[in-house]
Image (tube, rainbow, N blue to C red; front, top):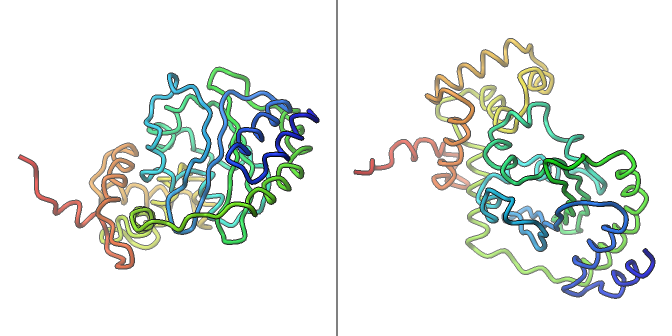
Amino acid sequence: MADALAGVMAHVGTETFDTRLMAWLARCLSFDSCGVIEFFTDRPPHRRLHRLDKSRRKVPEDAYVQGPYVLDPIYQLYRSGAANGLYPLRHIAPDDFEASEYFKVFYSRTDVGDDVSLLHRRPDGSAVMLFLERREQAPAFSQADLLALELVEPVVQALLAQHEAHRRLKPASHDETLAHAKVQAALADFGSSHLTDRERQVLFYMLSGYSSALTAEKLAVAEGTVKNHRKAIHRKLDVGSQAELFALFLQCIPYAQPGNTVDPLLAYQSKPARD
């Protein structure tokens, strides 16, 4: 343990820091895959390290940053302003997460059965997120595993603070800024030409994997009211299932117009039909 920690400290500010840090964490508990991802306010997330068995993954490596990240509970945690800390997915995911289309279309195809993340915020508003994962067939992280992480978290946070102070982040490119702005605009404006403000609030929770009951709790309304809103959303957007709704949202992202508050669904529906 001590020699591995010394190795991490010796590589602060270098390209091998993340690898050394994960090697040390592997001495503290077992995991099947891991990585380091950066979250920003002005561009899509960036994976700077990802150790995984690619043969077991059924989704392209770059699929996450094409738009689904906006519905990721971990990304939403970052956007909510959560403080530095450890966040097991099962503690922060919405109650219907495994029934959500984000889970079915993306997460369930990654061969991840359980994961826990460590959030480290940077002064500029961006953040670094370490994530440790176990396969679907492996035991979930136990309380003992989480306790081991809690014990070493102060050390990890201190190491990250030193490492990030040595790094110079490249400014976001025009393409990165535009791609991120389109995703954010799509989430903000999708369905706005068809739905009421309340229905759009319900729509966000539907896409994120919240049940009618938890959505009702979030919005301080009756569960029956939420169910009526859900039916209205399906009818007004002409979709017959959650799968169709999720697919429609993803298809509308390229048509979003950042800064114009225009429903991307209008542009998508008016596109020329292919022969």
